[in-house]
Image 1: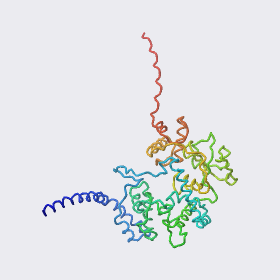
Image 2: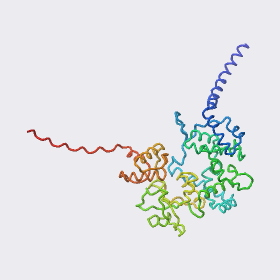
Image 3: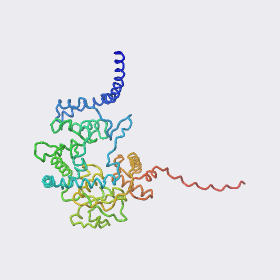
Image 4: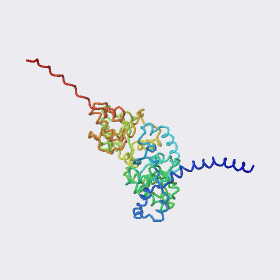
Amino acid sequence: MLRTSITSRRRSIAPALIALALLLWPLQTLAAPDPAFTQFIASLWPEAQKAGVSRKTFDAVTRRLEPDYSLPDLILPGRPETGAPAQAEFVQVPSQYVNEGTISRLASHAQTLMQQHRSTLIGIERDYGVPAPVVLAIYGRETDFGRAALPHNAIRVLATQAYVGRRKAQFREEFVLGLKILDEGHIKLKDMKSSWAGAMGLTQFLPSEFFKNAVDYDRDGHRDIWTSVPDALASAALQLKNKGWQPGVRWAYEVRAPANADCTQGVPEVTRSIGEWLKAGFSPSRGRQLSAAEQAQTASFLQPEGVYGPTFLTTKNYFVIKDYNFSDLYVLFVGHLSDRISSPERFETQWSASTQLRTSDVEAMQQKLTQLGLYTDKIDGKAGMKTRSALGAYQKSAKLKVDCWPSTAVLKAMNAPPADPKPQPKAASQPKR
């Protein structure tokens, strides 16, 4: 009787032990050390020491540090693709990224924050020249006004990007400065959360930007971009100021383009005064009247969706925001949200229902344009201003419709083999003599 009881108990326990072992097995596998990574991190000590990081902090933070190979933007020879999502700014069409529902929701909440942080925002504009709606729009875009949880350990992200990222040299420095942030006690390691690219805090700073621009605006003795709204907003404003923000200048003007507008001219290098653009046939949307001072401003011509969507004249402040995040869609989102905080008006021209090519297809297009001598910028799979302009130049040379928008049809035309020359008629045979 006792023997039967013990046997049955063993039988009941065995499945539970097996299940527990199966659950723990992947965790043990993931925790296996990566000797090459460990050696790489150890090699960074001289740089960390030079930056002022203590040996105690370096050892404590890096002791059991492991890379995260699920992050996007990594180069992993011999490894399958992780399937990690790409950055939205570079894979979505404008109508998806500058989504009306999101813009409306954020603008409504920002209006509440305008009143809640009124004195802080007035002070920030006085001290740095950046209007309240602009810094609030960045706050909204980056972390949904602090409501979006940052999922990653910043040090692990920075270390992984420094080890196998596409921008190793940059992230090598960012990793060392991340250690310096911890060593100086600005935040604890467990609270140092970031995006997949290592940006931290309410307005998303890399460590280098923290040391350049972080401000103790609430005067509590700490530069706290993680939990202090005044510090985070003032730090964002100082960053824009240091990148060249011009007080009293809009980020861009939506305009109606004339029928003969050349979309290949939509690059930062082609600039005119806004008044000259108006004389060339561009007209402000909704009949807006521009002052003499506005017309004197220098601007570039931008069609983010080729000839299909809204057209803009972009001021120097457009490119200052773009230096905060290198994406036209990001700037459009922040700029438009800042406008909507003050006014309910949407863009006059609607985005079209165009689709975005895959990154690999845009890279193939850039490579072909480079071979043809039409494109000299980075091969990065991002359909930015220069890619769209070069594409329009190709369309002109190939006698295709010039719309400056990367599409499957244009890529197919690029990859089509050259047409065979027409066969020459054979000469008539001469009669034999």
